[in-house]
Figure 1 (cartoon, rainbow, N blue to C red):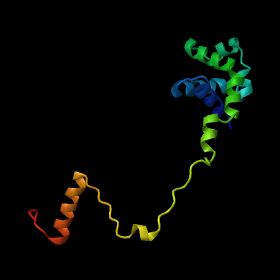
Figure 2 (cartoon, one colour; figure 1 turned 90 degrees about the vertical axis):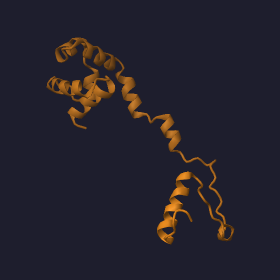
Figure 3 (cartoon, one colour; figure 1 turned 135 degrees about the horizontal axis):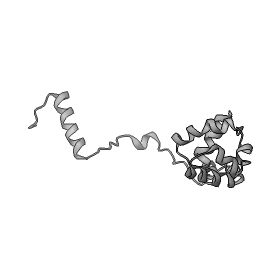
Figure 4 (cartoon, helix red, strand yellow; figure 1 turned 120 degrees about the horizontal axis):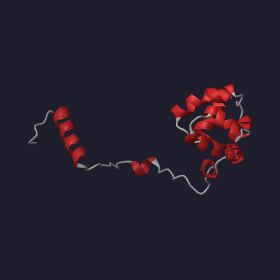
Length: 133
């Protein structure tokens, strides 16, 4: 990944800054030579004061820098829930198919009021029947 992408990813996903604020800070990080995750996580508090002028943003970024190894580890490890969901579940059995003879003559009718009205409209148009019939 390019340096801008790494910095923007860290600022938005790692530090939790909104995108507009993060975009404004990307160039400052690039100019100070912070283009990789390891260089970002090696930033000290004094260096961060030179890069980020707003204290609230600096506080969020500093907290993310302190959590640095945990953030990197979380990105490398797959999510347990997602991994469990992607595994095929052998317990679910496929429904057995009915033979064609069992379905012969079976008509399913949806008796909702909308479908009854739709049936009347179709009968009127196709068979040219009157509504009273």
